[in-house]
Image (cartoon, rainbow, N blue to C red; front, side):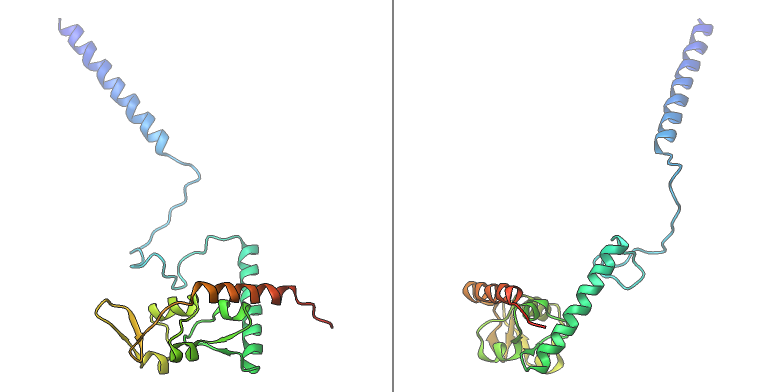
Length: 173
């Protein structure tokens, strides 16, 4: 009786050992590299330079080239008097659709482009614009006590058509 009890305990022990070994081998990854971080960033979307960019080198280079091209186009529009942003960030929407005056749009209360709208809510307003921004009881942004709205659908469609016209325009050397 004791022999069968010891045999049963031995078999249970071996079964648990095999399960443990199987689990350990299943979790083990010989290609795993150790990395250590003291604390994760408070905001996972914030990139303070210490986070890695999960993009191919060629993709990063293309984004950098596009950014440089947008900056050149922005400066050309600014020199022509056709680019007047209300926020500190570069506004690809205005640049690619031939420019715009976001501050005048705010003054007139006719709505702003989607990028300006988002950047105003993100707190990226230029100082002279930010000084005039308040919030209403529903926490919506107001500029000089006028509700800040986004462009109408018709105006966005018109801007999209303008962007397409610019892309199709033939430029002689």
